[in-house]
Structure formats: structure tokens, C-alpha cells
Image 1 (cartoon, rainbow, N blue to C red):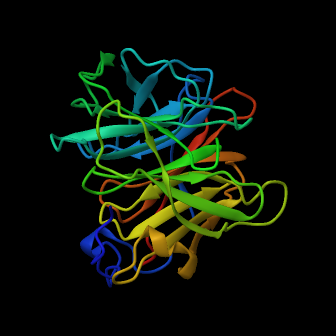
Image 2 (image 1 turned 180 degrees about the vertical axis):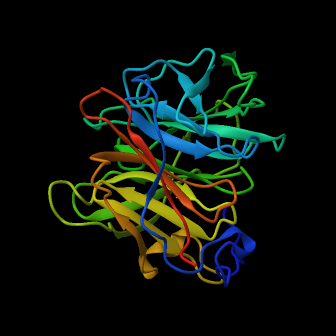
Length: 301
């Protein structure tokens, strides 16, 4: 569970690793090299190697994550052994469930038809990443957290993991203008199936046209007191006040990070930087040609 005594946001850009003001217009960090990540659906910033981003594709790929360097080139791939990827939809980086180092958390939760009985969140240790000498690897361990939804299957493309790695949260991709947040009831026990619990329901942000208010990604700030929510028409940040948790999202007015951008026509991935003071987004490429821009949103001075 998120700490109930999370303090207010920092009072200056970058102070305490959080942006207190608004975010600047996005700037292009790099363009993805090649078409191997043409269907990016999740992104997380490495804390091991500054500037490295982890990504994965949408359904249709195997169970693997990609380490992407600052120039947009794939440095290597991390395979999840024994895992069949049904529909990977979001990615987070947080401490491992048993507290030994950082893990990459993967939500295999996509379900457009709302029929799946096998939704699961995985966690694998982040391997050491060195830009000049990274190679393809197999994860040294896989934690598996299967679950069912209360009230029947749901489609979810948004995962958030607590800063201590002891809880995770999923936001559904609802079509009716309301988004529900579900929490693992805890404790996290490897391979133990659980029933998620409904934590909160809040109005979905975004522009109300052409599925513009469907939640496609989320990210929890390293301090646990902010939540990024990505929809097809933009990105928003919920800044929790003293004593507030994700259960209070309905009472929090979101701050807009950005609309669009227009060159992210199918935006389904968002993360904070490792420092927590900026935001990074990337889109799928509907043409499957690849070369999508990776955007960074800095805090305004």
C-alpha cells in the first residue's frame, strides 16, 4: 500500500526529484532505430544506467523487454523464461518484491474482448546495463502474480508499482468516461492467484473524441505521491496531497502534462525519468515502420 503520510510535492523544479510547476513542451530525445519496437506499449527508465529506457511491444511479440540507449538504438533484449506473452501492455521499474535490487514489472493484462481469465503481472530483476557492452540476456528470475478482476474480466493497459515494490495497481481502459483503479490485496506471494480489490473510480482525463479518454498507460512517481495517466489525446499528472493515496484520486484535479503530441498518434507508454523530475513518452507506429520519436517533458524553470 502507498504510504498514507506522503508529503506534498517539492517546491521547485527538480528539488526532491519532482516538478512543482508545469511541464515544458516535449522535445525529441531520439528516434527509435529500426522497426523492432514499432508497437511500443510500455516504457520505464533505468536507474542502473542513466539515459537507458526499457520498452516492450504490444501483443504479437514474444516475452521480452528491450534496453534502448540514448540514441534510440536497441542495446539488447531481456527474455522472460517460461513466460508466454499474451498481451503485454505496460511496464514499470520499482524494487523487486523481495527487496533485492530493482525489478522490471510487466503487466500482461490486455484484453480487448474482456474474456481473459489469465491476466498476470510479472517482475524480473533488472540486469546490469552498460551502453557500450550490453548483450541479450535471460532474466535470472521471474515472479508471477496472477489475478482475477472483481465483477469479471477487464481490459487494462496501465500499471503502477509502489515505491517499495510491495504493491501494484492497475487502471482499466473503460469506454464510459470513468476509470477504475484496482489494487493487489497483498501480500505479494509468487504464483498465488488473488482477486484484485477496487480502490477508486475517477473521471478519465483527456479530450472527449475518438476514444480520446481511454487510459493507455500509467506511472507512479518514485516518491509515491504522483501518478501519471496517459490517454490517447494527452498525458496528465495527479499530485496527491498530504495523507492522500490512490484511493483519493476522485478528489484530485489532474494537471495536464501535454496534449498529444501529434507525432505520437497511438501513444501507449509513459514514465518518469529515473530522477522523477521529468516525463518521457513514446508511441506505437500504426504503420509499423518504426522510427518513432521518444519525447521528454522537462519541468519549466
